[in-house]
Each structure stands twice: as structure tokens, then as C-alpha cells.
Image (tube, rainbow over all chains, first blue to last red; front, side, top):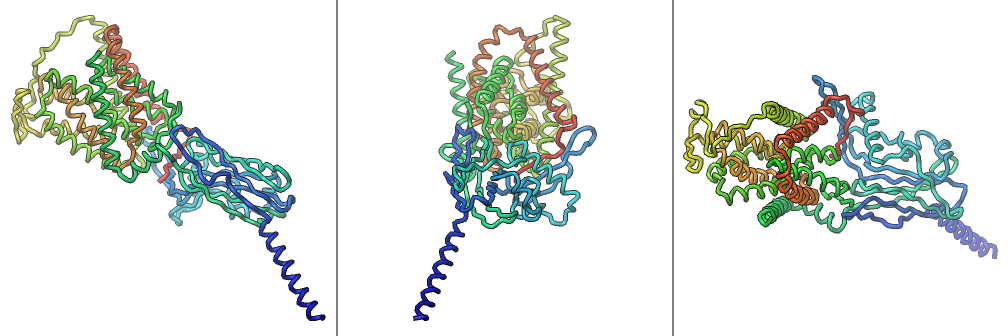
Length: 252
Length: 305
């Protein structure tokens, strides 16, 4: 009898444990309204809608979107005989061209350790791109890293402050991030971090693709894949319109 | 209307580019100049990457020179043999030009090279035109019209070159290196700057080749068609910098502008118009020079590989 009870109890605790495990796995959920942004000929920008749930309303949320990663060359101009000429350069590897983030409250950033913020890439001060040549001295590289971020900011990326996370109720959240017209095409990642007492306790990630579609995608891909045929078409169109223009002139 | 340029990967206001090309087309309708030397700097001012501006301008050049050459062709003002010899040099020039372009691009000096070349060219043409129109303005004297089959005497150096060929249409017996070399320079200009270089070709053909003035414009346009086509093909296939959408806007704007220009040319006083054009060229030159010689607000620039 006691044995049966014990087994029963074990089963129950195991079950209970499983339930808590399942519940803790659901501490954070994340999804995107659309997992792709289509750039068409009339594209003037748009926004990404990110939503999800958190189990406990005491936990803080950080949502980060970044991508596509490219090698980037930053050059510095120096004065040569009065003219400003590119002289020195630093190449950075896999720097995201787009970065934007949202936070559920202002204090979440203060409660976190600097190290954690750096690891999870939270806030633009933690986004300095890595030089390709590891032997470059940090002192030399720093102004180039800063310049990269400045350049991104002038294009409307890498904002200083995080956007707000909107809560429809205590648990259901929604984030809007802007995608300007000049958004770089490629693969993006969207990460949601659940923060408790300054520690990241859960992380969820989704990928997002921003690509040209329709006519402009056709042109872009065709030009990349069949360069010579594309070139011949360009020349043919130019010939044709030149000839047409001559016809019009003659008629007049 | 916003248009997304698939190759430049940016959105532009179609009206701005359209008005710009119509304006340049209008100028070329009035003055008979190609106007590529104005379009490329204007495109760069609007924020289009210089490499795309140059590559795309080369395709617009094909269209405008086809239009111009057809007119001359009908009047029989093209020396085809001369054009073909120049063309061989021209195509070689575009090949060399594209390698210069790629090398400059790789070392990050392409923007500098493009603006320096433009400053030099525009500065020379602008000041020459300005000087000429001002002196004409003060003298008020009618210039002696040169006879259509007038030719200039060539220097003995030109005569001494080997591989002489006969050009019956131009009534010339000269070394193939001379027209070939002129074509070569035009080819380099077409692929590095996206311009036909008519303002260099025409005087070179008159004073160095000694061609009859009547044949010069048609022959140079005939040659530029194929040199520009070669530059377009090289830019599009090796550099991926020819934006067909941008090219279409430029071509259509240019055609319409040129029509208006041709009609209005009758009401425009030649000398004032030339003065206006030369002042405009000088302004573009000064603007490019200011960008180069004034300390930029940010000394750093970023290029995505």
C-alpha cells in the first residue's frame, strides 16, 4: 500500500515537475506578424510587427532586431595638398547594417551588468564592429568603429534610445520597429530577452528576410546572375530609345 | 513619385531625376552637347553612389549618341572608316578604363578620381567657354565662318607615325594610331566618367586629325555609340553598376528635354545661352571642388563590401 502510494507520489511529482518545466519553457514566446518584408518598386519604408507573451509580468523584456551582416570598410580622409583624400582604412567583419531595439522599461538597462549588455548586444555602445585584422590596435580602431556607427545613424539606423514595448495586457506584448526605404536587403534576426533582476533568463530568436520582390527583385537577381545578358538588354533598350527619339525629332 | 532603384538599392524621387535629365537634355538640345558631363555630377549630388551614376550614365550616352548620329548619318556626315578605326581604340580604352575603375574602387580612391577628373574637365571647358563668350560679347564682331570642308594642317609629329591608312571620305592619309589613340582616350573617359567626351574628341579630331569640320560631329557620335555600349556592357557585367530603371528615367527625361530644347533653341540668343551654360559648368566645377577641398564634416566614410 505504502509502495503504491510512494509510486503514485513519484509519478505525481514527476508530472508536476514536467508541468513546471513546460510552464517555464513558456515564460517567453515570440513571433513576427510577417517573416519577410517585400521591397517593391514603390517601396517607401514600413514597419516590423513583433509580438509575444511573457508568463510573469514582473520580468522585463528587451527586443532586438539586427542584420544583415556584411564586411565593411571604413576609410579616413587626410589632407593631401589641400584636398581631402582617403588614406587609412579598417575593415570590419560581419557588422550588422541595421540595428534597432525596444525595452519594456528604462531601468532594465541600469539593472544589467555591463558584461551582459555587451554579450547580448544591447544598446549602441555595445555594437562596436570587430576588425577583420585582429592585430589592429584598439586605440587606432576605435575612431573607425565610432565612425561606422555614426554613418549608420545618419542613414536612420542604430538609434540611441530603445523603442517602447507595448503591452496589450500584463503578458501580451507588441513591438513596432521601423524599416526605412533605404533598408539593406538580407537576413535579419529578431531576439527577445527576458530579464529578471538584471539577468537574462530566457532568449527567443526568429529570423526575418528583407528582400526585393516582384519587378525590382527580378531586375536585381537577373543583373547579378546573368550580367552579360542584362548588359546587352540595357544597351538594346538604349539603342531602341535613341532610335525612337530620332524618329520623334524627324516627325517634328 | 518614389521609385526604388534595384541596382542602386535605394529609393529616389523620380521627378527629381526626370527634371534633371530633362534639363540636361534641354541644354543638349540647345547647344548640341551630350551633357553627360553634367548629368553624372548632378546624380552624385542627389545621393546616387558615384559608381552607379557613372555606369548608368554610360547607357544613357548610348541612347543620346544614337539619336545624334542617326541625324548626321542621314545627311551623310559620317566617315565610317575613320569611326571604325577610332572605335577599335575606343573599345580598348573602355577595357583599360574599367580596370582603372576597379582598381580605384578597390583602393577607395574612385570618388576622388571621378571628382578630380570632373573638376579638371569642367574647369577647362567652363573657363574656355566663358572666356570665348565674354570676348565675343565685348567685340560684337561676327566670327568668320569656317568653310565646311576646311581642314587644319597637322603637325609633323603626327605625319611621322607608322601604319598610315587612307580615309577617302575625309580625304586624309594618316597613321591609324592617331584616330585609334583619340578613340582610346574617349574609351577611358566613357568607362571611368560615363561621358562621351565630345568636348575633347571634337577639337582633337579637328586639330590633330585634321578632319573636315562637317564630318567631325557625326563621326565622333558614331564612335561614341559603340564605345559607350562597350562601357555599359563592362560596367553591367563586371561591376553591376548599371541601373536600368535609373537609365530609363534618364533617357526618357533626356529625350523630352532635348525636344523642348530644340524648339526653344530658335528663341535663345546664342551668346547669352553659351554664357549661361559656361556659368553653370563653372558652378558644378566649384561645387565639386568645394566638396574635395573643404574639410568634410566627417572625415570617415563607410563602404559595404
